Image (cartoon, rainbow, N blue to C red; front, side, top):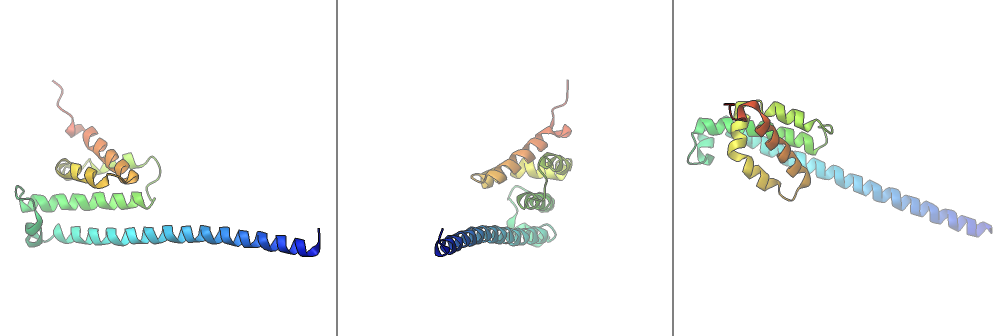
Length: 155
């Protein structure tokens, strides 16, 4: 092989390697930016839930007509906990296989089960089309249904 051919081949390999590394870096940067955006949006939602669940005048403006404002504020607190768990799951901080355990712990709370009973269908509709959100919703729904107080009493 001539020296010029070897130099050109080496240059082509280096260019290709640089392009591949650059593309991988761009994908990684895009993923990290998406995670940062998701965390910012979730922070805004959690802040809003914190305000709504502690300010009766504000909650009164948004509560369903058939619901007492105190009950609504309690359900919003439960939603805040579920949203926090959802964010942790979306960002990969819930290890594989541990989501059912966390869901069971969340649904051990009466207020979380009341929230799920009232708004679980809404969350399922919100999750449609997002595989991870659909999985999260199914796991929480199953935990709510499996909780001993959700089971009919044996005759």
